[in-house]
Image (cartoon, rainbow, N blue to C red; front, side, top):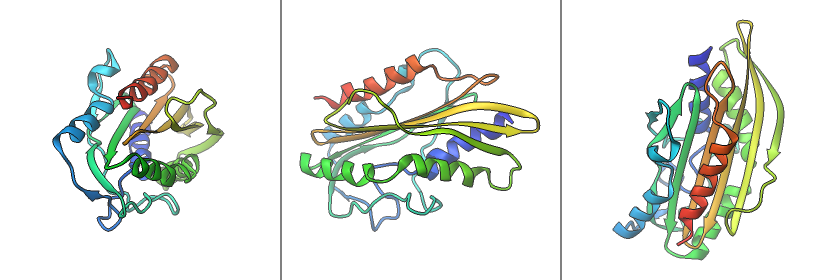
Length: 223
């Protein structure tokens, strides 16, 4: 059960897509990366040192969303020019998961356009479909307790956040879990933060740490 839940969360993060950059080549932004914006993109995303104590494992980010549920593939960004990008690595701890990515565009208008194209998708629906797809054939049961936007103050000029609260049941065990996403754009920079927290007997991510990470990404966007 524990191992399966960990894999489900990692798969769901991959299937839901890594925002601000499609992965089929034809829909990618045009790449004109420079050292300054590459360094900025790397700075924005979550690092191991941000997570505090605990046995956090490195998980490579999934760059191919070809198996994403219908309507959840990354939007076409081929008319935009990307000057910096960072999306590796992600981190997991006893089933819980923290993934992030950042991209910098040539102009503020292009970054806003990228954010709008991602934000208009129903990311909570994409996540629910991704969970169902990842669990298909496993025999585990999934119950959605709630889903929708997170009601928190905006952390960036362009900002949206949502959460899926769910319960997994398998082999007589029930485990409570949540999956949150935070989507940002400020100036020329964009970012996505995804956090999965699985309840006891696994090791959940506290609300305090989640809020800290969300605010940290916002702070790094502001330069």
